[in-house]
Image (tube, rainbow, N blue to C red):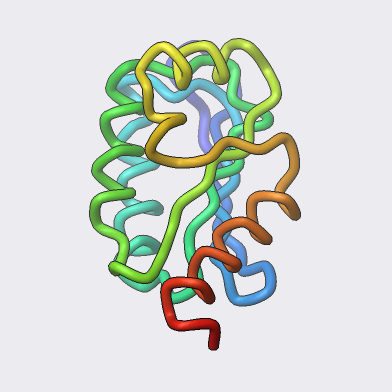
Length: 129
């Protein structure tokens, strides 16, 4: 966990749930914290075999720069992988909807739902393996 410039706490944790990488972000995603998101998400996307989930349940601010990073991360995924977001608060959901990225990556209210989605997409694209 690291301090963000606004005095709050910012944290990114990467974990694996059923062979799917889940990146959990807490705090504000702004110009000062975007490098931390990039440092965690791009390598995770490159290595994603069964998809990538970004859990933003505890994100208190989502900048347009963060949305750009999420789109670029999604573009880096292997062809057979998908990305999903977890968000419940309007602070995240509204910018995701306004930007249109919810048409590119599905948004869910729980991590298990998001993991199930990206895993089913990976299996479908691999010919039902």
